[in-house]
Image 1: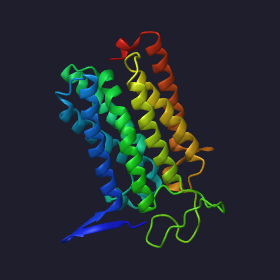
Image 2 (image 1 turned 90 degrees about the vertical axis):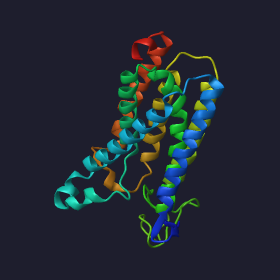
Image 3 (image 1 turned 135 degrees about the horizontal axis):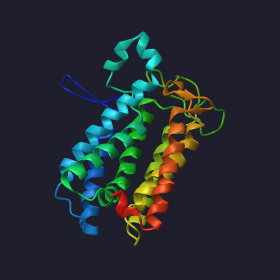
Length: 254
C-alpha cells in the first residue's frame, strides 16, 4: 500500500493520482476503439471528454464539501486539500450534467454518446478504486475474517487493524460492470438502455458495498450513508429510464 509511487525530481507521483490518470486514459482509448467498432461518430469526443471531466471533478469535490460541511465550518482549510476528498456520485452526476449541456449546445445525440461512454466510466472507476486501496481511503469496517486487509502506518486507513477490503470489492465490481455493459452494448437494444443499466447496476452495487464501509466522514442520513441515499434515487431514475427505453420513449430523453 505505497501512497508515494515514485519521484521525478521534486515532483512526487502518488499511487492514487497515478491510477486515476491510468483509468481516464484507458477509458478514453477504449471509447475510441468501441466508437469505431460500433460506427459512432467521435468528431467532438475530445471536447465532450473535457466537459465531462471538468464537470465530474468539480461536482465530486463540491459533494465532498457538502458531506464535510460541519468540519469545514470549523476548519475552512479542508477546502484547499485537493489531494484527496472526492465523491464518486458527485463525479457521475456532474459528468452527466456537463455532457448533457454540451450535447444540447452542439446538437449532439446525448443518449447515443452516453451509451458509448458509460461502460468506460465503470472501467475508470475500477482503476480509481485501486488507487483508493493503495492510499487506504474508502476503507472497510474491522473484521476477523480471512480476507481482512491490514494497512501500514501512513495510510489513510487505521493502521494495524484488519479491515474489509471495500476498495477491492468496489474495483472488482466496477471492472465486472465494464465488461457486462460492453457485452450489452454489442447487442441490439433501444438507445439509452446501456445508460439506464449503468445507473441501475452501479447504484445497486454501491448501496450494498456501503454497508461494509468503515470511514464515517462520507456523511450519514439516518440509517443510510449519503451515498446510499443517492443510490436509491439514482436506481429509481435508472428504472424509469429503462422503462421509457422499452416503451420507445428514449427519443424524448435525447
